Image (cartoon, rainbow over all chains, first blue to last red; front, side, top):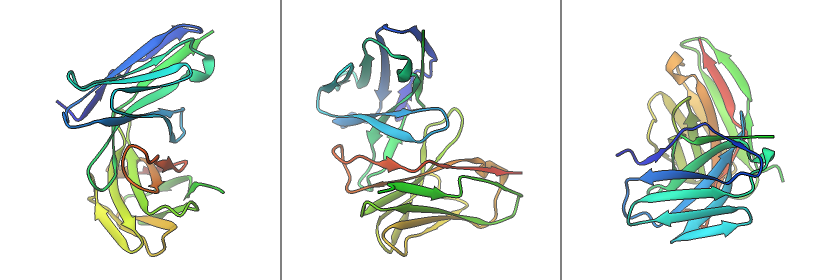
Length: 110
Length: 114
């Protein structure tokens, strides 16, 4: 299994929909992860950081299932402005680098 | 407070030419990173630095060199550009390592090697 795997999408959803992305990882020791958001032709920006089981921030909920080694991101009440690529990211080794998934593209339509 | 800046934003090189990409951060971060992003692939680490005067190889270091002579700057050099180095290059910095430390990214440099 590759270190971080994501469904590339695209996910096309209407405004107001609830959408969920999953990400699987190979390092069973991982206890923390990040979701970054990347707009088209822009740099990645941190959306959520999570330690242990999960985190919630407004319409966004991230969860970690260590037994199954998957990570999820749930977006409720989707907005047009949520259209972006969402990157599942794990902390790497002691050098502090991040291990990125390839990203899941979300397109929210009116 | 500009965060992380990168110059240039765009560049076209011919095979065999050399160039240097400059990354600057004004947040007093110790850690700095160079990543490349290619279509269909996640960001991959090229080189990184854990402090002024130190550098180390990442996942895909071949064909690149780096230097960190000043804490706020991290330079990425291509000595002899190849078409395989066509990519978007992102610099990032962080205060520390681990889940509680955000990595801040620059806007990227789009490099095409013909």
